[in-house]
Image (tube, rainbow, N blue to C red; front, side):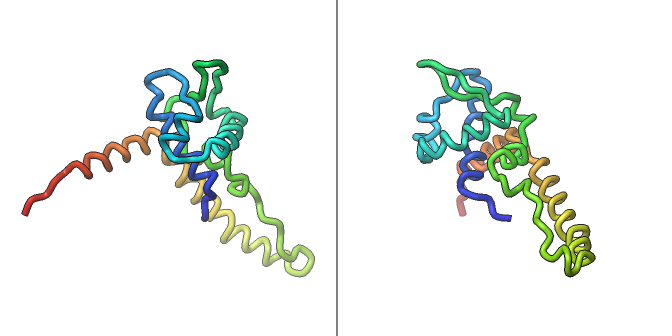
Length: 148
């Protein structure tokens, strides 16, 4: 499975919002853009999809921006990617419905459905809170110094 740049940026931006969840103040797209090095225009497209999916709330005005719609423990990588990666939810059309329907049914039941389930289970098992924990672990591992 290949995740597009838009999907990767969506995960990164949502993780950034999760880092600021406790502050309960909106985070601007400009702030996210500057801190993550992602184009502001591109982030606007990503946040339109995230807002449509109900994963973020937007606050208008000079002190406005975006906030997570739920606690970071409740938002999964699957939630984010399925809002952004339309192909993640797309079902493949049969390749030869008239010629070999049994082949298509066999491929669906033995290959595509198990693969879809595995991807869903894997992505649904990772929350934003878990990503924040992994970031903290990475930071602490970087700060360790080894002397020989």
